[in-house]
Length: 423
Image 1 (cartoon, rainbow, N blue to C red):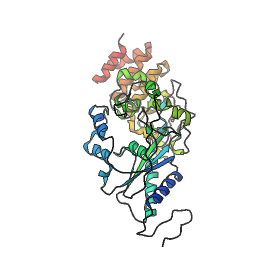
Image 2 (spheres, rainbow, N blue to C red):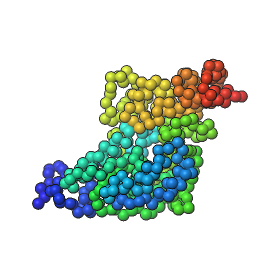
Image 3 (cartoon, one colour):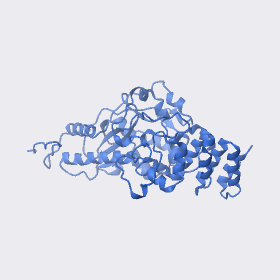
Image 4 (cartoon, rainbow, N blue to C red):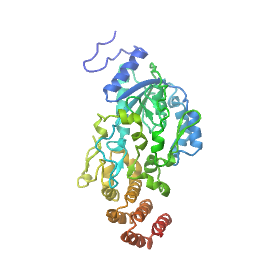
């Protein structure tokens, strides 16, 4: 016979007793919601419906520099998650809402905009930690270990949005995001792959975008290409602001720089324009995702002695000038980015982004910090500082550019200096 339920915890079946698939799935989803996830659903594992689309998308080069997406092993795993382990049978898919970003002003051109999901602690750590907790709970509930089970976020080669749709959590919007009809799309997905047979939820079959093309019209770089002949939304990542400010390691194409505006890490424009976010998005109850004020660390990230005298402008409408001052200081950058998804861009990449934003602002106030950036050890930073000074276009800016041009040895920086000094 089963032991009675323990006060405050799940019932632990005797070894050999398998809870009914439907009951276990229901209890697992309830547990996920109790742990703070906003949505939870279950689906069976099988080969992807979108493997051919993925391969065609990669062949078209839409993934840009993200070579890891095109690795043979990664494509095979995305095509069928059971390649992780032959025993895998089911997936729990959860959504962690990071909120609508109230209190952050994105309109002031002298202020940097960080994508909503990256303003607090790194979501990979938050989501994966909670999914691993669900795995431990599930093992206790099943009465035995689950050696094949795996906790996944978007760093794992799993088509988590497809699994989420099949688990009933939403549909693929024209902006390629998964959208829930009553919650919008401001959430990160987590997946628990397990060898247990769990009763699946009904897949989300409807497409509520209809004729709406708000996201396509709002995208300033034209990264969203609409739907293909099969109805799948298509994005050219090479033109996406999120890709350009995070994954891309080289210079941002000159013709796209003005479109970045003051966005220094990621982009929410296609989500901000979505009617389902405008109407239904709410603030997150997860403190880990809250925007940080000046000098504040992400939630649960402990201070280290080296940071005691370091400060930074935070992620809640930070000053662009202060952001670049921070990014030019290796130790200050380390303090600012520790425990944050922003670290993904790297110091040079982030400084590059801020230089572009300062160039789009075009104010003489940025002259001192951009001049300092002309001496950064990274050519990537120097090149974009040169472009930004060209946009400031003052006598002092031209003097700084000419002075640097007389000593610059890197060809790519020299090209930017020449373009910035051209009549």
